[in-house]
Amino acid sequence: MKVPVQSLLFADPREAADLAAFLGRLLHYDRAAAVRLQAGGGDALAVFGRPPSFEVLAIRTARLARPETLDLTVSAGELLESLDISVEGPGDASGERCGALPAPVTGPPWTGVLPPRGPWREQAGLPGPDALRASLDAAVAEFRTRDEALPEEQRTRAERDRIGREIWSRPVGTTELPLRAVHAAQSLGFLRADPGFPVSLFASGGWLRLRTPFGSVALRRDPVGGLGSLALTVGHN
Image 1: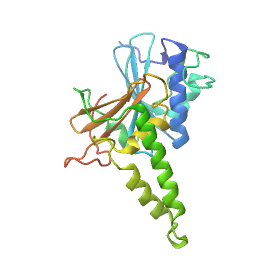
Image 2: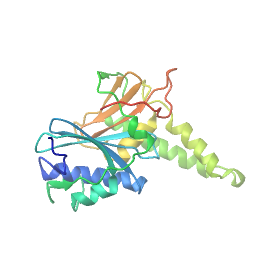
Image 3: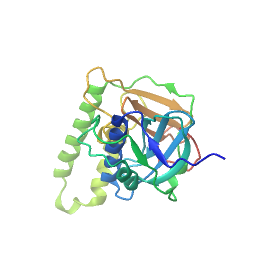
Image 4: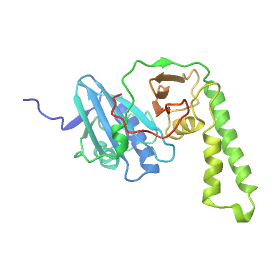
């Protein structure tokens, strides 16, 4: 009889530290965040989360010290506590390599909305990392300018949300990827200023995926070619 996985043994302390940093960023946006964990019999662990501010799925992988098979949803906060790592930043090599698995929880609907395994096809038209960061800076500056220009009677949450949706829904380069996906990648630590840093866009079926060496963000395309909210479908990474 197969013994259920009780703990995660990481290949290197940095793997656990990077995962802890990712969980901390998710919890910044949602203190009650859940994450879905998947390992398909190899040494790669995929961790899925959904920061509510961006309406995308965030995906972080970590290398395990041994092959594991698991698929469960747990509290992000409890998983972070189990890692027991003091992290100053991504790549910190301090701390332990092992983390106990928290008890499974009933996940929110998005945990049944995972990207397919593939095939993923690379898409043309994505600007380079420096141009992506410049687009984000320009979008933030535009939002502030338009917000400050609002008459007092229009300075409402609804109006600010409308401006934000208009700005962050704009396509990036000549792709279908909305700017909010790039914003999510930067906010979660996936989009960095490292030299030679590769950023790629892939598509599979109704999904788009922005991938960097530090993690990915994925979202669904709606059937008519636009980009809408995540729809409830069961998939795999």
